[in-house]
Image 1 (cartoon, rainbow, N blue to C red):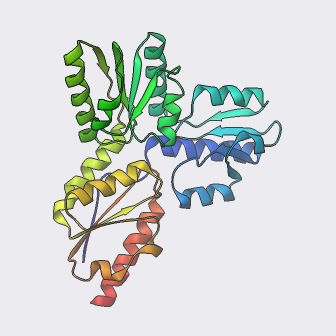
Image 2 (tube, one colour; image 1 turned 60 degrees about the vertical axis):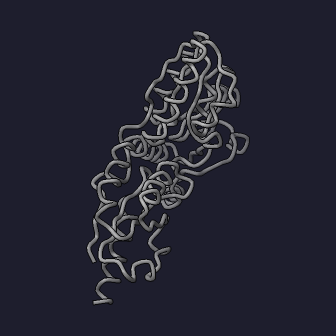
Image 3 (cartoon, one colour; image 1 turned 180 degrees about the horizontal axis):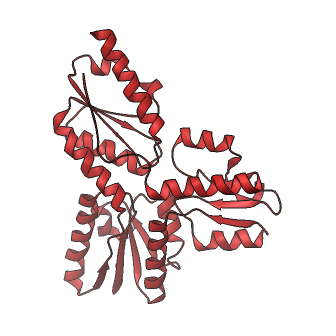
Length: 286
């Protein structure tokens, strides 16, 4: 069996930064709390808990004078204000690229722009971006959703950082078509994460070379899900797994080559376990 690894996969800068930042503070000050999962990967969250980094649903459960950590996905402005009101120490682990989106949205909202955010309206990153729009924001899941939005005279379009280039382009084209009909002013800002875009391109590069694609990463990870969608859309049998324990020998019964990619919050050890499992399967079959 030929195992082909995508050239770009695994931890991105924002994820590495968030993990290293929280581990350093926990080592120095003891237990800290994250408002939701620091990154969307169960293996990583389990390891962080061993380091004294605990996930909480809200700040009410954080001990007085404790440390409240904003996750890599970011949050709205109101949450940072609430942390101060609760007399908690703030540790901001927001990915710098996401923080840049916050600044863009805040600046345009203050200048009177309607903010359109392309992305999953239920995703934590998108909810956080909306929190910087001063009530002027609308999240749209796809180009078709724009048809039901009441567009204002001035519009700023941004994207959830982990979306695909093609889908963002489709939303931007549809918005421009609608804007030209009514002579609206539109600012389209490319806020896609370059690392995520590179991972998507690397996955596309190996898809034509393999019989099966394995995508490793959290099921609640948006960028990992998009990698699986890209492979599915190419017509390649694709399996999105969180750990090697989910692998099934029947998936590879008629496969000569297997491709592997992983999301931006997937640790190297998860990918290595998948490779080891496949090599062992191949050895038994031989």
